Image (cartoon, rainbow, N blue to C red; front, side, top):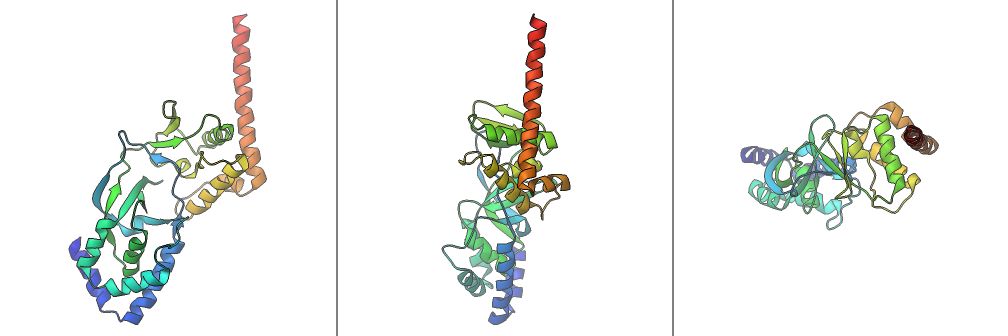
Length: 264
């Protein structure tokens, strides 16, 4: 991997400063446009997740949709990349401060987001065109997601029932001890679309967040047109959730009615 890093740096060193600056500005712009919302769900790991040192393909690392450069401006990131582009050893040492979170993704692959540290550093590496990075990675061990919720949020339960009804979720289990739901499918699209259940907002707000998540991920994974058509209409998505919830309540009522009838 280090030999590949040195080869890239040798190639970039042959560019003039002006050529490198123009190219790196384009690469940085592409990275900042290549955003995706991190899932609210977390990969479930018994005993907690740990950072392990490993090499990761740069193409699998995404910029979180809420990120904007803060400590350093885009101009400063490009300037620093131009300055450091030929120094493979220095770039490799900088990777020691890069931390990533790993998530399972629909289709069986993994994707990564910067976690504790390294947002600007990662963009610098992208400007230079490094194909692989060594980082401390919180690996997504296994194929189970954990979705935290509050039992006092009936709107969240409505959303969850709708996801089950339309097939966005399957094979789930409630874990009452931790007030969470376990989703036993690492490649679940629904795990990427579920909204933040801790935020103080009503059903309309939850559904708006789901639509934003679908918009964010739709260029990276195929989503059923039927689902998109519902999500893209404020009225349709609200009615769809309410209809499923009503169906659930009717089934629950009829079940209790039958039980009462048999007990007579």
